[in-house]
Image (tube, rainbow over all chains, first blue to last red; front, top):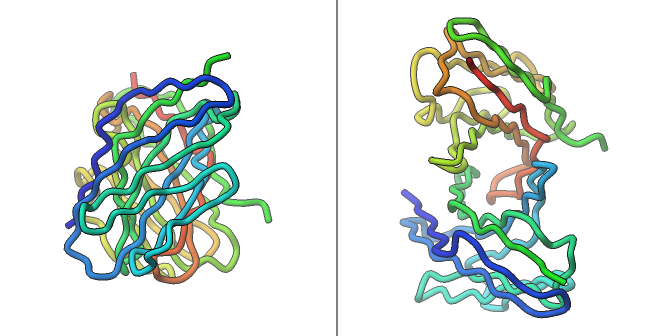
Length: 113
Length: 114
């Protein structure tokens, strides 16, 4: 069984600043993957970044990076140089080899001028 | 690639009516997932298919819900009879291979049952 916890229902960041969204997970799988998805008001779920648990190096995609702490079962998302278009709901998700993903409850990110 | 296509985008129906939601996955993807999103429960996996075969339907809430995948390019989620508590956004997603691979989501169907 897998559980994903996002303890921050809402976060706010000023444009051009950096923000970190938290996520913790629990899994019985030895081989698993972690994801961050973005859901803007359009409702579309968009993959932001992916991390394989067997890799020690933190994944990076342009302004988005993760801090993966395997022992602590923590997987936070850092957004650098925040832009107005980053405003959205962000979902952390975990999945094992069975291909299905378990999602957290989401963090709503506001970006202010 | 057109992405995952869901229809309709919005559906409003009266309690007791049958509702059918449709999904066309990305060509070549061998996994298909149906998720439901509500404010109270977030994103819940209802059922998923591999190569058109249902693998895990433990998330289907009640017998009123059924899903089919008659071929690799089409799936339906049916609710009969519908109830107001079924109101939610229903997402279809597809992926390629195990891993799991990233899910590619459709735009969702917002269902309102009055």
